[in-house]
Image 1: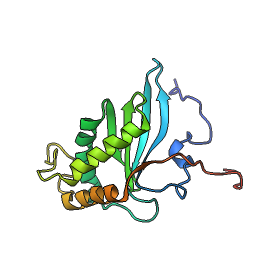
Image 2 (image 1 turned 90 degrees about the horizontal axis):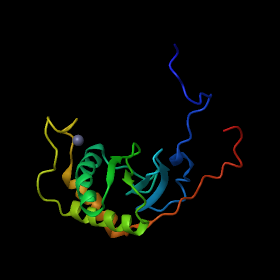
Image 3 (image 1 turned 180 degrees about the vertical axis):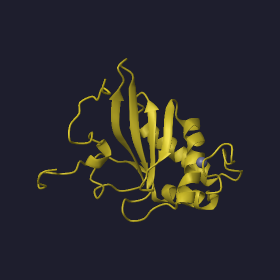
Image 4 (image 1 turned 120 degrees about the vertical axis):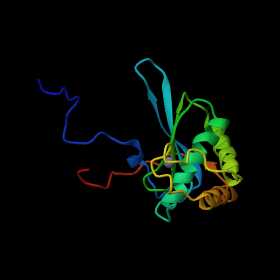
Length: 172
Ligand SMILES: [Zn+2]
């Protein structure tokens, strides 16, 4: 019996982040990327936590790895029901999934507080050992602290979503 594929078609599923016009945003910012409802009616919100302006730089892998370890804890200290915090593949920021629909100003405040904690972090990075991490040698606390400091100095805001205008593009 063939494996039951659902809704098969020739296209990949739509991914919301590919609809954001990355030239129209101004980092650093938090942005509500989308809200999903589970079959039982719970809501899960996904946020962009963008530190660098897209396509104008990238955080070194070791530094964003350290930001991942630090923000995983510090964001949970300032915001309830965080499900996941993970780096963007483009290395300009992180994604956060959270249960419910916290207001954007609250998420902004939590991210700022977590960045302040990160900028002041002067202890060992949590979870850094061969047992706890998949690449424990690849960390850079100084650079992670610097990125947190710089984002705070630039001032974070809530970014509205600016959708790509695909009206001029043929056969996407
Ligand atoms: Zn790790």
